[in-house]
Image (cartoon, rainbow, N blue to C red):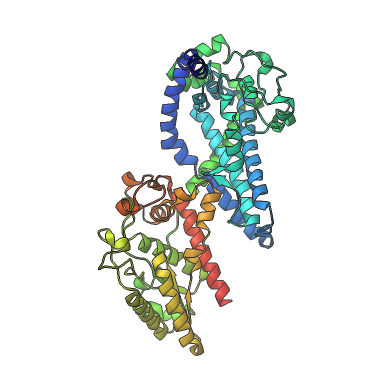
Length: 549
């Protein structure tokens, strides 16, 4: 019993967990988490996703020959996972390096180093200005790396993740690296410590001793410190006093001082002549070159363009349509949606809003293409006895036979007016089989008349959305299959008033029969929605162009 008490006292020593510095850590963790969740994460969390998409798209336009060049090569997914882990770690290192070497940035990074004792919560003792720089630089560099990997390997199997995290990082943290902010000394020896940063090396990084200043800036890999001359490998256990020294520690001894002291120090030490010193204004350049582009990308991801009204039949007169046909607009899209439950946070007409938008953008991209009104009555399950989505109030359903009849009548109407290519684009899984049957049947029937009917299945089935989200750190459970990240994000982008934000919660552990949703809708965003919509649109355009030659 005594040994158990001693172990507990060693792991949770009162002198550390009740120290004023530790208590400030607890308070700071709570407030910073709230601040980041409402501002920093919202503003910067999509930077990596947007940067990845931008890089991939740019490379595809510049060197399309190399798109997917390494896809299917044995071992490339594992190598790509390691590559992304190395890039992410270098991003953390270089950001950390700048925070130590640039005077203005160091004033804010002092908050982290002012900890007088080390607990696992100390990792969150980061000033918001520190986090803004880290989120910006991390998003830009890791997003660029992911975009390159996605371009070369294709969107499927770019990397291996566990619970949304790079598996190499998961293994590293499971090996004990979380002890880096603790009183537990754990060195990995002289050889390994030149490759991987040990908990002991990071504790030395927090030392107040002058010989330890600016040492071991790395997070995972020690060779960055070796290259930059900041590596320190302890030969034996060292006695460490944490913090900035007694005088500086006192400046950061209260909760509010952790937020305000960096600004007070900057103001108190400011002199006009500093504006002429490169080391002083370098911090401003860092923010201009890193933070502003990140904000721009995030803002760019928050906007979208609605298709022109002149592609929608319902917005045209019969004379407009006749003129369009005479001018060569002989391709027509028939979008199908549905009126179905989408959990407590998404309106019943989700599919209709989404597919009207995407069909319009597909038509604009193809050119010489018009869009028929969305078919919103589709099979949603048996009415009697009740099945599928019909278990939820408001869902409207028809039989497969009735749905096929509507599709065929719409296609026959368009053929009668002179359209030569008619394409079904369905935003719901229940629409796909019927669309294919009607398309196959009518294409065969009208083959000699030169009229083709297509079922554009890649729009729904082969759009790489799930793979793209998984490559960006979202797990399959988080993504979900209905009213999760994808559906919610897409509707946020085209019809934001159709989202009940107060009910956008994590439904991973919910009973689908009771809620009608799965996945984690709280992680949905307008930024993600824009990218997912674009993936659908590009998949459909490519398939139509490939089929038509």
